[in-house]
Image 1 (cartoon, rainbow, N blue to C red):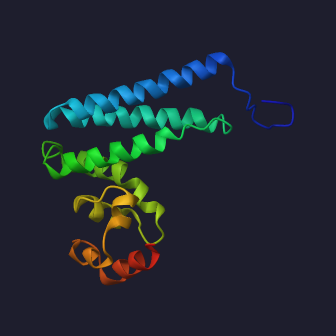
Image 2: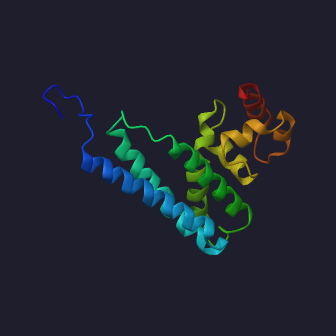
Amino acid sequence: MSDTGQQETTLSRDDALSLQAQAREFESSLLAAMDAEPATAVASLQAASQALTELQERLRQHPDVKLPMLERLERSMNRLAGELYGRGACDHLDQQAQQAFIDRFAQRLTLLDGIGPVSARALFAHGISDLEQLKALKPEALDNVKGLNAATRARIKQNLP
């Protein structure tokens, strides 16, 4: 930090290598989850999620560093989580752990105006794990999502492109 209280944005070689190592750890955990059997994939997916969270925290310290592939990898991770959930890979988890799993991997759905955590959970349970999947739906397909009331469906439909 400088004397003015502004955060230092110059990235040292060591920091760059450390960020690269964290990105590789995330990618490795995600690949392990993709290759695993559903029963063991949840743990690998949660490790990937944790690695991504730590990497994103580090990147906030360096706003000049952009890793565009992270968004794509996060979307893949969320889709894998949705597929695993839909195939019953989380059935062995207690209700609190299942809720935490859904909340983590449905979180990006809340970026669309009109979707809060409860609606995101309902969409995720219905097999929609990211905004691209949601935007690809025909608006009337939302009528089949259990847990969305009419007002919520209307808000989501209104905010879809």
